[in-house]
Image: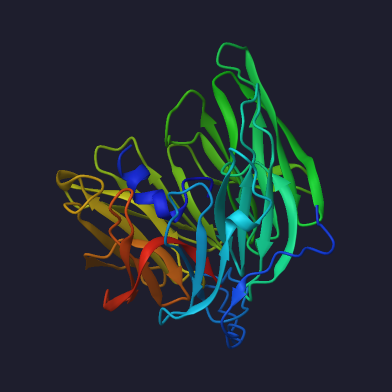
Length: 379
């Protein structure tokens, strides 16, 4: 999704091209064993969207609050696989580095510094594979893009200011490793509306028709899958929902207008399902992510009475089985990402400080593997 990365998700959301001869390399510790391809599920069950490569790796940073962080890639036992200092990637005076993970790859964006008028200049993405080798580079607007499931391409939407105009127009762009930015869809909407790219699933680019002039999240007018080859959009979720995640056949969304925060879990296509889950009184959903195999959804909640960050914050996770529709509560677990199909990263971040990062199972049991800032998972 085009939203703050995992290291800032709780703090923010709770409070509401290819270059030949690339020489950058990561410090490597040891190889990671290969993972066998997943077995195809039955037609009536959620289909996996993950791209089987190696055993999942966990990306953390000891200093993500600085302009050019160090990124450590860890095995699930906390041992280091490899590490990269973003300052070594064509550092620019006054610039910064930011990061994303998608499938087996990590994208490190080198963002130019200085002032500008109009749209910000594009950033350079360095794409690293699971072994720490450079896959390639590309250009795009860091922070406003959504990478595809393999982490080798990304899409975004732009629009001219149109709050006072009779209509709004813009374009959805695509770029990637060895692929220059290019328009794949021109759109036009009534005034005070815009198209946002909110994700890129195995089914296509996920676009939402959203109101303009809104700070933070807003319920969308509609959300659909964009076929970039034909320029057509197939609606997947109607008005009133803010889409959080689309993995394979499963989509999750929040309704921000209800008096009781409500989570929607929907299986797309014919014969699918649409289920809603209401947050317990005094609690609010802040995220909901789908497991790579599509079998579970982890809806993260925080206790509104205890604040949205720091040592007094309290989190729990509503774990939903997409096969049965039943949910269970995992007290003290704040799911920040999936590690394979049966484990999750849990932490209770203190804003601006590194936090203990735990690896927990579907029962909420686990242990701390490292202290730092959680970035994402390579899977």
